[in-house]
Length: 275
Image (cartoon, rainbow, N blue to C red):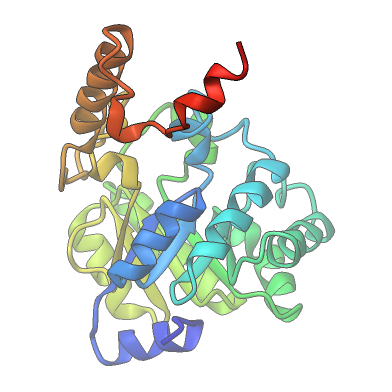
């Protein structure tokens, strides 16, 4: 059954946890979809794990549309959410609406995600009114990393915690169907989840959220440039890939590959007539 904003709302009502992972290509999205993952986020984290940037700020709309289209082809049942990249929505409500429309129309996303609280509520409201579901994102918002001064836990003081709670209510009031809560103390994220009517998706926010999301390269040990504290490594696929690449390199250089079983044949008589 196709996951939708309605099935998300029903899951929260029935206290059923929601699984979400990032993906950036067709084959990975198809594997996740077949595994029963509820939602696939085409995150601007592709700037780090796919394009090799130091941050997410350099990711463009063209990058996001390209990768979202690929994911959408593989995710038949999962809800596909596409990140709106830096400066695709901050400049104006009009820009936000146009770019959200591109992610849905050209990228075939089911919903879009943008970062921020009260300051982006006019954009959220306009996008939702246009018929595009919006997932909000509060707490540590990577596009604002220069303001935060790095990847720091958010909401640890009374004022900061109050501001996060207010932001959560603001994006809900603006029409968001869900909100990602990143790098926030577990008790605060649980309180926000209990107070909101919409779905909360945690990443580094403890087990009290309605669902969880991780970058798949992190959970599979495929990206080691930076590993946040909240990441659980479910497999060391990166090590397996490196070992396979080394074996291939060795066999090519020793002429062990390709062997007879990987080679097409032709009658000797045909070859002899060519001399």
